[in-house]
Length: 398
Image (cartoon, rainbow, N blue to C red; front, side, top):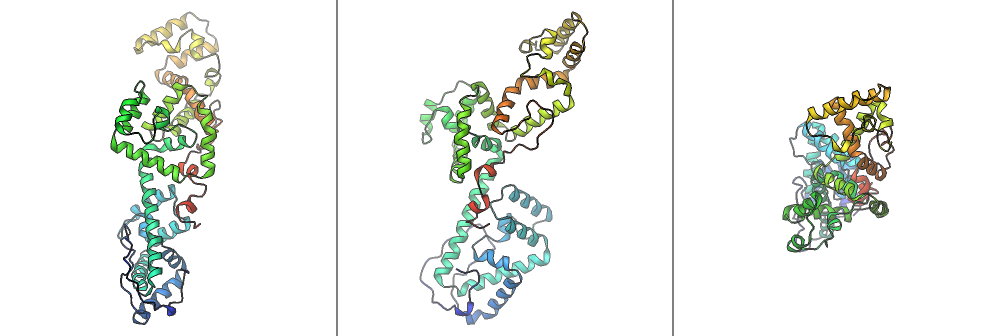
């Protein structure tokens, strides 16, 4: 159907065909009746007039796009704060064309425009009365397809709140839960209970997810979405990066996967803390892995054999320090390890350096041995999923 037909050429008799369902866009209405154009001419003229004034409105509605209310996910009467919040969410996951999103935002935030848009939607329903049945069915089908795409994306957004970094790591080659546990994706729950290993914290977590119907359904929906909407570059990247994971230490792999299943934004949090610690303590750089010398070795301590009690730790550190010559290196090591906050930060770097190094390798971040942040980590899952998210999710429109 062209974006603007010559309405005077309408007049086709309706066919006795059931209407397709229209779901979840309450302000988008197609009339089930057929009327001759001459009987509703005044409505058509007004509809054309507004369409001439706002051609994007006309293009969008005749392409089957949801109404601007549905595009943003707000109802009539929504507050400015609710509209702004809804817009921010859509921009984070831009499966609608940006021009459509911005137009929706302007209309929803401008009372005069919103009133005119409401009139336009009412006139659209009148306009559909004179559409030939085949065009009406085509329009409804386009709209239904858009709504279904929106539902899938909204479902992904909801799941993504729990699996944010998991999605990012998945496209960096991380094995999915079935792969890691050695299970077939179509395994029934009894098979999973019988065959899923249960000898580590990660495998216990996998067992819990895959044997709990709601959790497994959610996880499977996430994987289906990523698979269905993956672009060739993202899929190829995953394929190439899978080889890297075979080279990583198994203990670190388990830690990374477990963290991604329990903390949705762990990657940024880890790199942010690493940057903060080293930017505030630049004289530590020579004494962190992979350097052979550490504050522990300088004082003759074993980092992995610290007593649990704080007083015992501090007594041990003081005792070691008394036995050494007061060189700048020794004084620095002592000043760091005797202070609990500094000691905790230094220990955190030691405990997580291997994990950070793996993440830096995956995301091409050259900051594990540097003190200057290199900007945000490029792990937006949308960028990994879609080569052109707007085109992929919006029926080809850019």
